Length: 106
Image 1 (cartoon, rainbow, N blue to C red):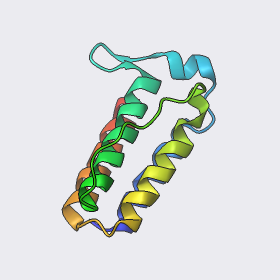
Image 2 (cartoon, rainbow, N blue to C red; image 1 turned 135 degrees about the horizontal axis):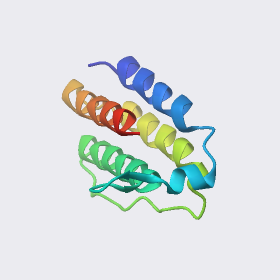
Image 3 (tube, rainbow, N blue to C red; image 1 turned 30 degrees about the vertical axis):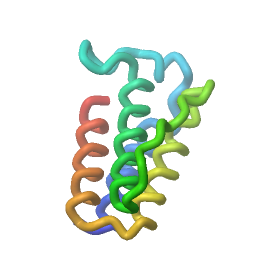
């Protein structure tokens, strides 16, 4: 898996959700996932954790901002951080698989 593949699937997800309103973000993502915003925030956190792993840094909590409309931007930032970290292909593949799984759930 390459950085370009991860960026491609991230772009697909951002295009899918980037225009959503607050009520749409608040809608359910399924019984195990909470709201759509909760699901995407968990994805953002997971990718931030992968980036920290790639750089041998401790995991840090990604803040949940007051406006869920910022989630697509947060996702783009953590994906860019993961790519910039020089993460190995297996971490990029894990991130891409998670992005794709979230996209499929939404």
